[in-house]
Image 1 (cartoon, rainbow, N blue to C red):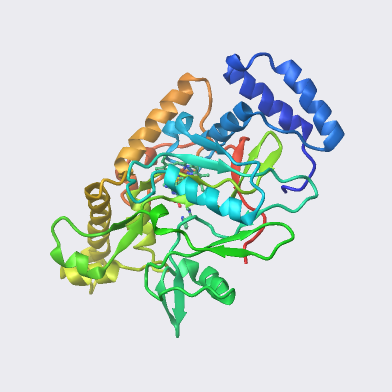
Image 2 (cartoon, protein in one colour):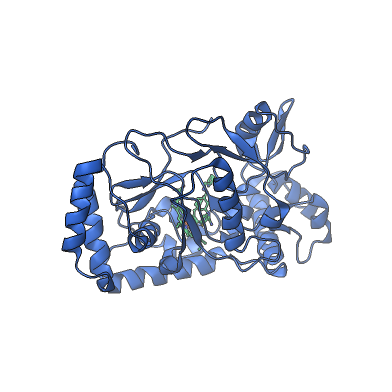
Length: 365
Ligand code: HEM
Ligand SMILES: N=C(Nc1cccc(CNC[C@@H]2CCCN2)c1)c1cccs1
């Protein structure tokens, strides 16, 4: 857990590997001596800018559930370890979304991580209660939910703090920033920082009447980055979406926007029997709509075939580099058309390598 003292063995393993992969950093021994002394004196140590940057890239490379790892070297690392106040943290999160290409003129999305202060052993640390920087509210209204059911509890908590949304299906939730010794602060994201795409269909004119939209930048804010025994509990990271995440999960899951029956109905499909495969036909059209709409809006997105092929290239690259790729088949295989992607037809080494990302211990209320 992030408030345990640093494990010197974990620090040494990381530093040896980091300096081995980056000869330009010079010999590791002198650095190891300094770090051992720092840990002995203070119970922790401070990463150099290069160690922080490369450690974050290694954490992405070690993320066994991630299909998008081919470009792990291109991660843009924003060192935000000096930020202390809730206002500073909020404005840097807004800057993150703009740097990621999520601003209004955006669309060219790039992978960015913002790394805030490390957790000091035994000390409380700043945290964000949101699971992603951009999420839609879920309003419980006598039995039903308007918006994202997955956010219903969080939305109720925000309303408990006095937040009021418009009550629509795509209201963007506030950021809830908690710094030690202070009550949680809620912040509305400025529109300039949140790029959204209206979802329509290349052939079905009626699709626009569903009033669907989705935000451009997926930015995970509830995972802890650990590098060489040092924990960074606030280290939001973004990439671009793989279309199936929106089309086959966020819009399709029965406990999310649950749109398959609606789309099938509007398509005039026979929903009286499973064997008409009406779910599958509606699912494909929903996913075509997402990909087509993002591409039409000039917002970077990738389909599950392309991402699968890229992951196969990543496997080849890592093989050449003499490294095994940790991978979790149940997350790597896309939620639509698994068997017609190459990632389906093989086994993977399941390993828990460090540096890495882990779910934050603090379960947000
Ligand atoms: C650049 C484009 C990227 C794409 C297309 C991509 C794609 C994905 C997808 C589809 C998932 C599964 C998500 C789900 O099913 O809910 C995933 C998981 C994950 N990705 Fe990536 N990713 C990208 C970049 C990144 C970056 C930049 C990082 C971190 C620096 C990252 C770290 C992770 C982690 C830690 C998980 C597992 C999350 C969990 O266990 O809950 N990915 N990725
Ligand atoms: N494309 C992305 N998708 C992604 C990556 C990691 C985690 C998540 C969210 N996973 C949790 C959801 C909610 C239930 C099942 N999946 C999405 C990225 C997000 C951040 C960088 S890439």
